[in-house]
Image (cartoon, rainbow, N blue to C red; front, side, top):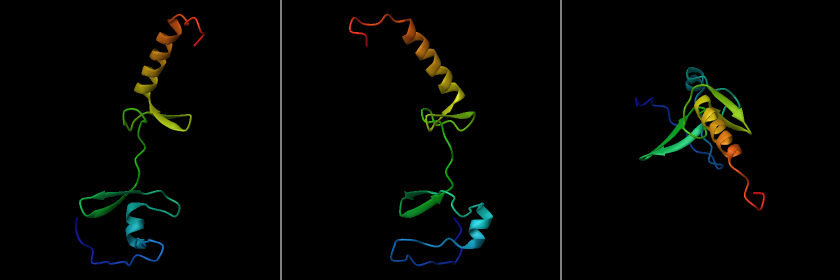
Length: 94
């Protein structure tokens, strides 16, 4: 990472202002979410990447009960559901 020479102070609520020029160049707008993580001794802010809840894939995602699921995992879940529907019910109806 190239140092910018820009420094910001943390306010009493723990906030830091990201300079407008950096926000514009990264396409970060008001209300956008950022992921906050730690890498060694650095605090890293990143634009979140939407991923499949099960496998982490980023392509062909669809929402299912407020979770993102890729096409491949959706197909696997459908196959599992079909297998289970072929099994006889236990005597207690579970």
